[in-house]
Structures are given as structure tokens and as C-alpha cells.
Length: 162
Image 1: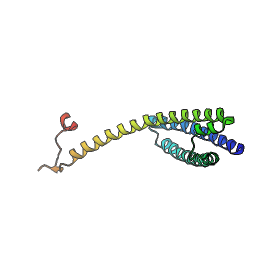
Image 2: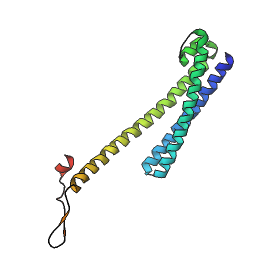
Image 3: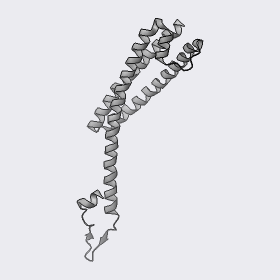
Image 4: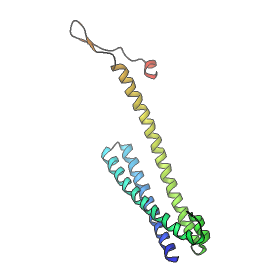
């Protein structure tokens, strides 16, 4: 069991490292959004996707090891807290790693939640602009007898909000 516990601790260390890298990449992505640098946004997105794939792989291995460690005690899908109770010799290290992982994941969630809200607000504004332009352009453009285009009436403030 000590080999499996050591392997679980190594996987948790790798998970924490990957999440820290993801946090740094999330910050770079937000900086690219603020600078409106599309190339940097796209590059950051692809890097984040590879990191998420590595995290998913590590998490799958973590789940398998947790199940193997819980099997002798007849515990299905044990949490790190439960494993720390079952294996007191590794309790301190497992709980420290759990807390560190929670902290980093919380920071990532906070940053991505803010970015998601900003993106949602921006999308709402763009939707309004497209709707207003569509309403203005819906009217057929015609020419007068002199060959000059007749422009659509100006959009008022009340029409823009409606």
C-alpha cells in the first residue's frame, strides 16, 4: 500500500503543478483579451486545452489509485479526506495536498468566472448592435429621381433601446 500511497502523492503533486500552470495561462489569456490580441488569445486557448487534457489524465489515474486504496477497506470512490482517515501515516501530506489543490482550483474558478461574465456582457452588447443594425438595414434602400440614395431615417435613442 505504501507504493500506491506514494504514487497517489506524486499524482497529487503533478495535479497541483498543472493547475498552477493553468492559472498562469489563464492570467496570460486575460491579458491577451484586455490587449485585444487575437493571436495570443488563440495560442493561450490551445495551451489551456492541452493542460486540461493532462489534468483529466492525471485525475483519471488519481481516481483509479483512490479506488485501489479504498478497496481493502470496502470504501467505494473514497475522497482524499477519507483516505487520510484510512491511512494515518500519510494523513498530514494528503490533507496538505488536498487543501493546496482546492486553493489553486478556487483561484482558477474565480478568474474564469470573471472572464465569463465579461464575455457574456460583451456578447450581449454585440447582439444589441447587430439587432439595431439589422432593423436599420431592413428598410430597402431606394434612389430618388435624381439618382441620389435615400437614406433610412436616423435611429433615435428610444428605438435603439427597444
